[in-house]
Length: 174
Image 1 (tube, rainbow, N blue to C red):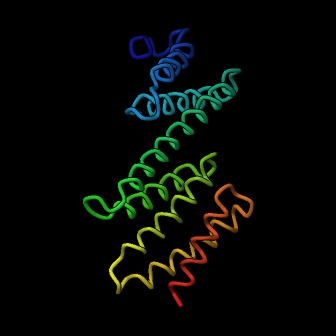
Image 2: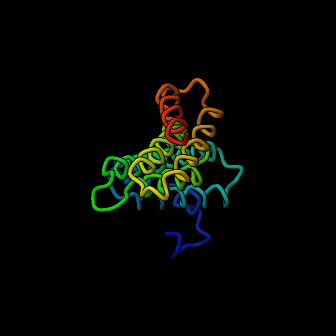
């Protein structure tokens, strides 16, 4: 409709319904998220074209929900790499990079603490399995990452495990 009748009286409704259709088609976080990304784009376009419309608030809510879904997919991917460990290479580095990218793309995500601890734990495991010439540098990175985690989440649910990792890393560096 929008292509055939760009000035038609139902263009606004069509634009919103396209976004709703992509939103409805958005699958579980474990599956391909093409529809989710298209829905975010479609709602963003709707907001851009009609910033004062009454449905803009709902569009923002849908966008936030879908961004959380994409962030959760990133969490699942990072956990998968972490669980693979050193199977067929260094998957800890992949877990670190994946988690860092999720935090960069979605800095306000509700999974921030989980991702931060996953980075710390992955760096610790990576250091433990590193070649002897790289261990000192990697354990130093673990300690730096501990300070990042403990400063941001001093009462976090993983603080005890983070403290244990910190103590073990300091002992190894001595």
